[in-house]
Length: 171
Image (cartoon, rainbow, N blue to C red; front, side, top):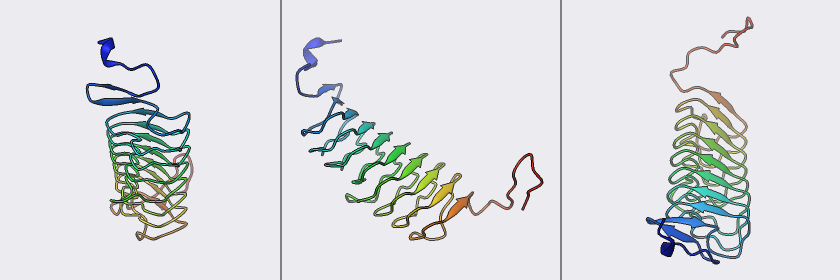
């Protein structure tokens, strides 16, 4: 390692164009690895962003975890978890959304002000924008509308049956 490229003082390091450190501002317990990850941080604390532009709009928010390029890019809420490329990307401007969990590439991609949603699977909940308290599971599984709330969706439009292995329950 070229030690002259490292600043071990109070500033973040930049290695091969990748930001590594705690981010700008006065917040504590933050971790960032990736170009522009947590780059807007001011006083937010206990945030983790790993990946190009992950958590970029996070300023004063806390307790967020973003893993993957563009994960949580425009999310500006608290207690969010996003894992995967563009997961919880949150539209094109800073969006106030909290307590969402998005696992899978582009899951909850368009969420803006919706809270307490869970999406698991590639593009799961992709079109959800303002809905709250939804659970969406499966590749490309979508809520009934962009503003739906309090729904559970299992599978996409191609899913034709539902079963619980080990039981006689089958629809």
